[in-house]
Image 1 (tube, rainbow, N blue to C red):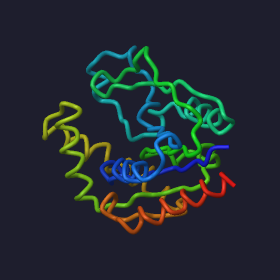
Image 2 (image 1 turned 60 degrees about the horizontal axis):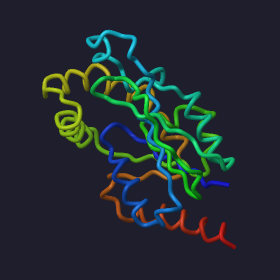
Image 3 (image 1 turned 90 degrees about the vertical axis):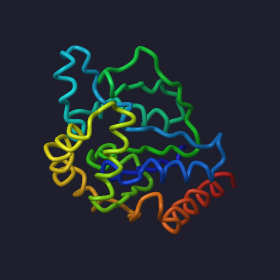
Image 4 (image 1 turned 135 degrees about the vertical axis):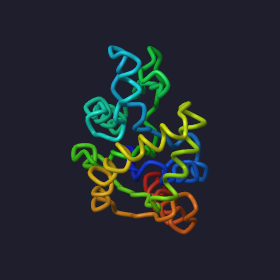
Length: 207
């Protein structure tokens, strides 16, 4: 039976850094990471201009049903084929990534604590907290480099969708968290505590 950890938090909060630092301290063959971003709906049927205006911070943009189905399979000991999603084209690739049911499964994403069915599959729920100005700076840097957007487009998007969606859908899920890690990937103590809980569970599992 896999140990399921959900790591949520706002866009640019440092979730990915937290996940990377935790995974680096655990045996490689015992951890699988499931990014929420892989489960955005395929929007290939829409014109490119419409695709570029998609609100990725709204729960409707995600195929939660498939994500829940995949987590259940992993928890039961079955492998899955994880989708590959491109932010540049807003479509899913025909290819997939095979994921084995490892002892530790980390689900990471802004909206993963928003869905009750998905939450109920998690053994530990984590919320990575960060100052809104810090998050905005990270969003600008990431979207310029990884998603080919201009600074003006990033700021417009932040004001129109990212900020209001954060307040409506993401920030409220903090109440479901078992652990809150402020300052994201810079919080060594928070990462140490979470890692030690996971390591303890792995030791118990091996007995």
